[in-house]
Image (cartoon, rainbow, N blue to C red):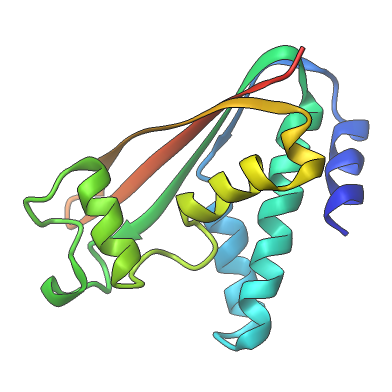
Length: 159
């Protein structure tokens, strides 16, 4: 499914492009999958396929030598307690991201570790991708009483 999905997306859009950005779409795909499937054993398998298809679409839409940026929100002040490693703690950047990952408080399907491992370990992606870098995570206040933690993975499409 993942190999075909990326190619299908690229086939119906103009391109390839110099720069392709996925801006907080991964969490929305994950939320839709969660709403449809619930928090059962099938969810993580579906989310892995969705992430792989999404990354393949980004690569397929990027011209050789171009750049991709996967940006996604991974946690929110909503629904987290201080014991979970709340987004509003004093921890910053990668330390906060690591704590939330360890406490399993990231939104399902949004882990930077999973995305990075696909980009660096999936042969269908690694032959097209180089220079995978995690940009320092940041807090984004999206409402008066809600802040989300966001990260970005930048990578290049091999020339």
